[in-house]
Amino acid sequence: MDWLLLWESMPLLLKGAGMTLKLTALAGTFGIILGTFIGIGRIWGNKLLSILLTAYIEILRGTPLYVQLMIVAFGIPQITGINYSEFPAAILTIGVNSSAYVAEIVRAGIQSIDKGQMEAARSLGMSRSMAFRVVILPQAFKRVIPPLVNETISLVKESSLVATISLVELMRTAALISSRTYKPFTAYIGAGLVYLVITLTLSQIAGLLERRLAARD
Amino acid sequence: MIKITGLEKQFGHLKVLKGIDLHVKPGEVVCVIGPSGSGKSTLLRCINRLEEPTKGMIVIDGHPVPPGGIALDQVRTEMGMVFQRFNLFPHMTALQNVAVGPLKVRKMAQADAEKLALQLLEKVGLAEKANAYPNHLSGGQQQRVAIARALAMQPRVMLFDEPTSALDPELVGEVLEVMKQLAQEGMTMVVVTHEMGFAREVGSRVLFMDEGRVIEEGPPAEFFANPREERTRSFLRKVL
Image: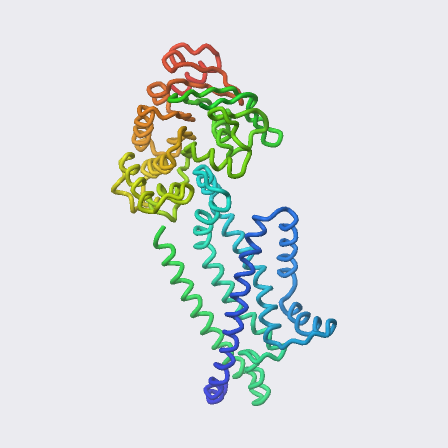
């Protein structure tokens, strides 16, 4: 372990971490918005829509993110002749991949609300969509926050895969340091430490949120 | 007021209601009793179409209950429903639970809806719990809030689905007291219940159901003193 190198690499690693965070934030937001619609659509929509969305979810969850990334970053540009840079390719791939997991979280959250809640709301004369908005969603929201934070934490880690499409984020930075210094142990320990700091911070926030949401009921 | 003819309900192969005829007059308190699985709750839930009837007609004030859409929502505002498990909205205070119907469905102004809600909470004896969340209330208190919530829509009929069955025995009385008060004010009520004392004292008519049919009905005094059917007699022997 080269402590001096570890220390000197920190500015570069942190810069890479900035890119990792930017990727996670953008792809995560995209995934949460898209996934929420897909999750609701799966419960709400007609049979055909529900089948299509189920297929979407199963395909994305049933294939590795790495494979998806390769298809988007290299496969599609080659067959269509459309070129785009790595950054939007990464956001799109990670975001879409995450939307499948988010959709399942949202669906489970909504379906975990007792059936009697919908019945009580309907018995007051609320339409299905009003009952959903006023009664079901606010309760489901609380239940999906903790799993959504977990999903975001795993996005931070999975975003390291985009190092393979030459996007210089945290993992790629470590790889560059390693090949320049021939000290992979120090370089990757450094990256690991930075990832750990990010994920631990996020789980702290998750815990705090969970306690505050639980305080009321 | 409510006229049910030839009502049948089937869940898959299971026939839960096998042709029910029932006529509820304004101001009447009809108590429906019978063993578990006799179809009492299903009958009640068919009236406001929380369950879709398989066959038969339900007419409210001369108008058939519409199968769905805005027309059904409209009819439901006229029928308050109280559930066995209260089904209060846990993310709202007692006051918000009662006010939400007038506020969202009737589009009443916030201040008016809250004023109405407070009056109703007072009526069920819970004005001081207005700002409490349901999980800080006892079962009996929750059920009284649920009654206030149903009343907030100013319904013309109240449907009670075993309102005291999920309560600890010492909490049953406070809920029955509120229901009795409602009956005395002339509210039309259909009450599915296991409380024979309530049926006897407050009911204008008692209906005994078994295996999806009405076996016997009559004024409580007569019904409890001289049940005609053997099945009614054997049921009453077990519960009284």
